[in-house]
Length: 128
Image (cartoon, rainbow, N blue to C red; front, side, top):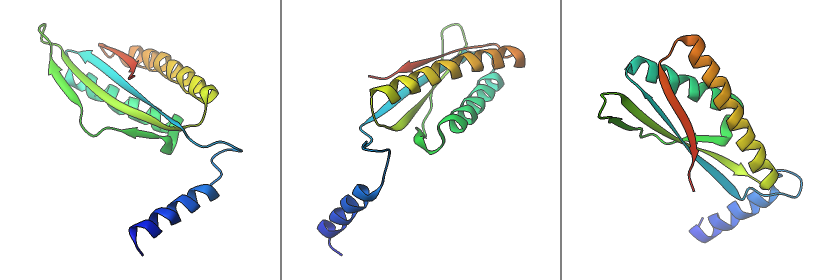
């Protein structure tokens, strides 16, 4: 099979997949979560819980970058940035729903971190 034939086959297969009635994915949403704290174990606990919660909410529609950006701040706190992308967003309404879900996840993680006694500060920032 030639490269051209393979591309045509993939194109035909994609036409057969019903992503949603009349829609095709046209957007991805990339988010950076930054967490800061003095205790490395607290940062690790947050990152693992974030991963678990996002996978539970978005399943196969979420992808995580392998490399974490790590740094030590002037006050000796540690900071970690994790980047993840929510894929296959089909329209503006779905994008709005995903953003609302992320806000809800942030609120739940805030309550979870307080209940766990974690001394951390974290946020979500959508990459443009």
